[in-house]
Image (cartoon, rainbow, N blue to C red):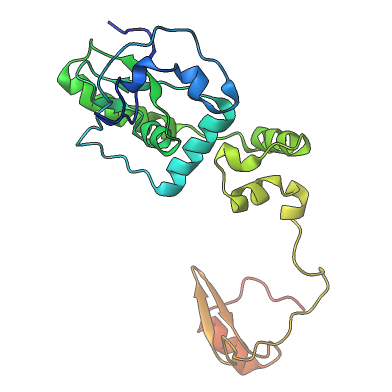
Length: 230
């Protein structure tokens, strides 16, 4: 069965206080800005234990982003654990909670899974979300709207470079960097030289004077031209 989400100790240390952290305050009081969570009884449970074979990695930067998200939005996604307290999903959220020095975190206990199912869910919970894509036009609309409202776009997880690229005017992205009639400056070191023949599939391109019969014979290499513009 799946139990109701409930707060458990996140980073308490035995002997630090006279009673477990889970008996002091609920997670709604601990989350920044005081956003309340669904009222649930505070019960004493062991600290969530990281899964030793967790293949997902979390950098300090990403943990800081998750912590900032918790501060801004409150706790929106409980940690998933087995009946033994070992984490199935939520290692980064637990690390973020410890970074914020939260005494409790909401947890959903999944005690209906078989051992293989638990290990598979550890992978699936991380991988399935990565298989989704983005509607970039709609994403640009949302980012523009948030920016106009003064919302801190750092909190949505995109890098500054990604946001800049997404917010760029689509028409500007297709505009060339030079005027159509502008002649580029001569390269200091030439890529090709007179007499060079470039093979492009069935086509041949020679660098030379098209009015010279020797050049024309060289590029045709004994063949006949399908068309000669004049």
